[in-house]
Length: 114
Image 1 (cartoon, helix red, strand yellow):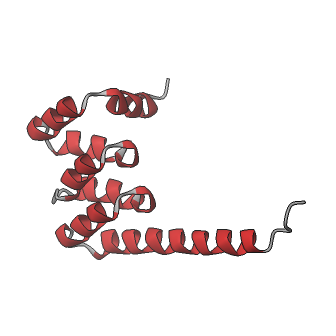
Image 2 (tube, rainbow, N blue to C red; image 1 turned 135 degrees about the vertical axis):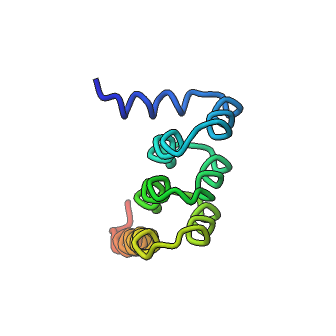
């Protein structure tokens, strides 16, 4: 059994109020565990996580930067003091833009369907 995946499913199924309570009363380890699944969580929860000064939380968010809301990324960049986190965020966003550009170029070169 993959406990990490099961935890992610559990988080996604929780009512938002319960998730908020976990954030309100949870310690850094709880926040880091939740942040590992940020790309599947509501935007306001991700933005709350992005205000954390805990490096594990920041790293977990930065690893998912391509899938996170822009507002959360700005909060993360404003909160973090490490270049590593900033670099991960900028790298992920750059890769996303590159992937989109390649996708658009490929679709422009597709033959028109009859």
